[in-house]
Image (cartoon, rainbow, N blue to C red; front, top):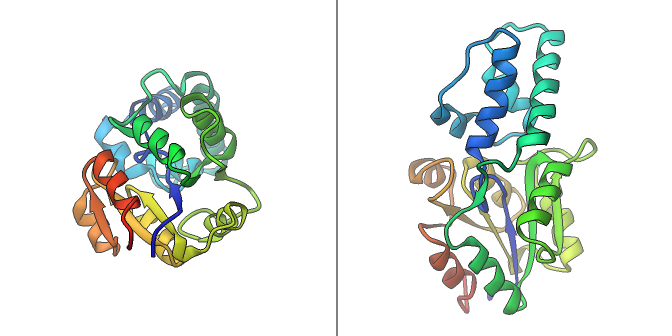
Length: 219
């Protein structure tokens, strides 16, 4: 079936955010007396929301009050410094513009907090996406399909007419849980081995490949 809706993950799929995330978490860790982590570690810390990011970065056994202090400092720092290094991946702005011109309806569904997700999309891709959802208190995070299903309803699109695009196993699991054709992108935070093991229907190495895939007559 020809696809008419594309649902994207954010971090590691549309935007390269790892440096700003790493800097914010490392600042919060350092100021609270904890060791920091190299940039490469953050490719594996991210993916299940901000609170899980901090849990993964902290040593085991940290008490709730300390965890909350680190989380709050991270949140405050990231809010002020979220786009120092962040940028779209190569070819992504052109991809989004082409899909928009072609009439493909588009959404973003991310585990990043909702306000930060919307701020990033409105900054880098204004007047582009029909639906933008980040992590919300009343909606389960991915890999739950809840937010994707809500996006499909707002897009007036069936699961069979959609494609879900992401860079981690969480994204692939999300798409599969929603009954959507899943695309793993190879420019993000994880690699082909993880995406294939998670059951991605196909992998794409470039934004150009992704455009051609979405526009195929049948998937």
